[in-house]
Image (cartoon, rainbow, N blue to C red; front, side, top):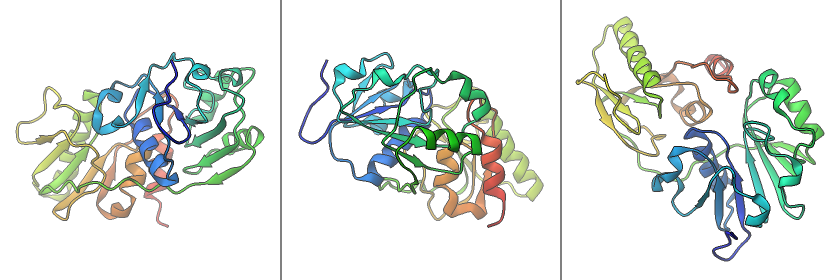
Length: 269
């Protein structure tokens, strides 16, 4: 299958994670870099079927043959050799420019997954501070390593009264975030209306908590008094301008270090 569908260089995005975050980050990167060509995303994420997330892109399964897709540029998100270390250099066409998007990883957990012949990058964009060993590795496999500040595509604000809770799941984490918001409100001695923005209303959500399925949800309206999220890359970055009202509950991840990210975000600058 050749994915070329229009003028301009073909951009292939390799996003091997399961969540929504990889796809959201790619939207922001493509907007920031103003990349115009047709886009194919290789992913196993269940969110790839949502036109609000991947509209205008062609979606290929994670097992797709990259060489057969014949990209001009390959963008490798987050994991320098794929989630399981499955992205060896030989899978990437030699003529393609290869870009890596680097975010914080638990490098001690990820490094053993690297294949014997990992990809070499023409450029690596560092999207947030990395561990020393992680950055040193990327400098060894990249022609250049530079920071990149992301800008999100324009979107409508999510304007609700009271507190806004944002999470894409799983449901048990979403319910934990809602409970955390209630605990915070109790400590503050307030009983604000609360709205959950999530792809689905989780079973067990208190009936007084309003649910919205809105994407993207990164621009709060003027009536939002608090924002409650986990400490994933996108949430911390996108809500940074509202740091004074943003509260984070980091969750354990096998490869993402939400605890370090939350601690950094809470440290006065």
